[in-house]
Image 1 (cartoon, rainbow, N blue to C red):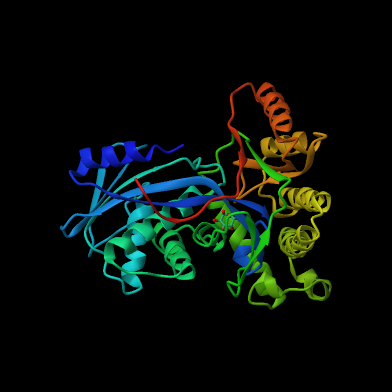
Image 2 (cartoon, rainbow, N blue to C red; image 1 turned 135 degrees about the vertical axis):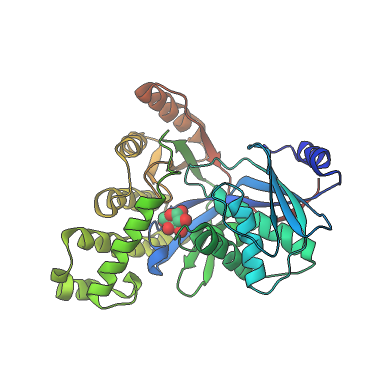
Length: 378
Ligand code: GLA
């Protein structure tokens, strides 16, 4: 857990002033993976893991950024922000995106800390962007609604940092609703909060394969999906149908056909998952989660042999209703749906077996769906 008093004290040591504190949550994604870049549907939920930003105006023409995890203070003039190629880009990118949208960002000092695991597919970067957006808006004396905050954070990541991601992670962090899954239409931005049954528990287990260097593979998948859409004659795969695939599928390479099959089937699964949640049917939801994993592994090909092994291990546990890889893929965490009552025993069994299988320690946690962005007291 983040120690807010220690964060504020460190900020005073570094910058000689008292800060205000802001935070934004990481997310799980229940279902709807690799669909946001095709304008499809996703179902993330914000969790009780947050990135915190201590911030104060500095009365100077620059922005200074420090982190409790990394050495040194990064500094850039607010009127000439440029990508530097390290962790601080996410913060500078937000200032840049705010300026681009017409908001004058004051000179500011920021100190970053958090308990969202990095490289685990839980969206630590989106949480950082949304937290910094809240901080800089507050220092600028400006307000934006959650949808505009989402757009600023997404612009920071895609246009400044250069990661061609979809809108899911920033939406989940900026538009969080405690106790709810967020069914999001990535074309219209329409968000339907779905109450999660009390007995549902989502368990995260680290595969011990870091996905943080997977940007190239993600970009490649995105290009494949775009190529498939172009060959089918639709703007994005959201607009493709099974009928269109039957008619024009021969134009696709086998690989492109598999990517299509994933996106179309995953969009259908998100709707089926929403229906399952509405009738409180966690067994059906679990089956959809298992199917999502198979499709991500075989058709989208974004899993990893070690992640497949962990997902299979989790799926075989008698207390698990469904399990799958989560996030961009190529490593990161596996998400397992279990019941609140069984969660402790399930976690112990899976983590024990997994540690033994790979011969090293891994982290795991039960995700409480209580994440919320905004200013918090020190
Ligand atoms: C990453 C991206 C998201 C989304 C997922 C896959 O988390 O940031 O936009 O594409 O991968 O579903």
